[in-house]
Image (cartoon, rainbow, N blue to C red; front, side, top):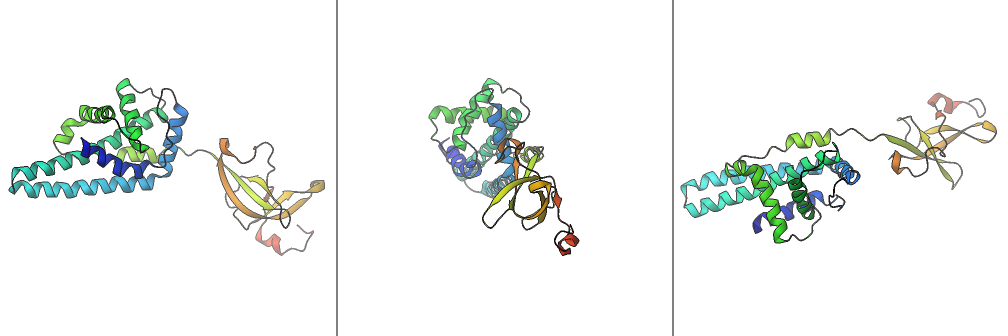
Length: 252
C-alpha cells in the first residue's frame, strides 16, 4: 500500500498540479466545472502522462512474463509492481469519471464516490494522506476493479479523455486594445476573428466620425471573466481593408 501511494503521489502531482484545491462537497458544482475546464485546457499534458503510464505498464508486463522462468519471489514482486501501476491507472480514471459526472453532467455522487473523491483530491493537491485516506482509495478501486487488476488487465482511459476533450467550448468575447495616442490604449470589442495585433480598424470618434486606429493586442475572455463590462465597452465598427489603407486621408 505504501508503494502504491508513492506511485500516485509521484506521478499525479505533476499531472494535476494545475487543479484548484477545492475539496468536493455536494453540491459545489461550479468548482467542479472549473476543474473540468482546467483539465480540458491541459489535455495534452494529461494525455502524455496517461501514455507514459500505459507504456510503463507494457514494459512491466514484458518483465513479468520474462520472470516466469525465474524464481517465484521475483515473479511475485513483478506482479505486485504491475498491480500498483494498474491501481494508479484505475484511480486516475475513477477520479476523472467522477469529476465529469458531477462537474459537467450535474449528477450527484454516491456516498462511497464522495469518500474516494475527497481522499484522492488530497493526492491531487500534494497533501499528506492519512492511513484512513490510503485505505479509502485502495478499497474503492479494488471494489470496482479488483478482477481487472488481478488479471493484469490494462485500464482503458482513452474514452474518458475523449469525453473530457469533447467538452463544449465556453463562448469567448474578443477584446482588442487599440492605440488612441502615443501612450493611450483602450479596450474595444469585436466579433471579427480575423482582427489581430497590428490590424487597422475603424472605431467611433468624436462627432460620430470613423477613426482608423491600430490594434495593439487581441484577447479572448469568457463572459464572466472580462476585463471591462461588455455593456460599457465600445465596439469596433469594422476592420480596415487593405485597399483602404492606400487611399488619401479623408477618402475612407
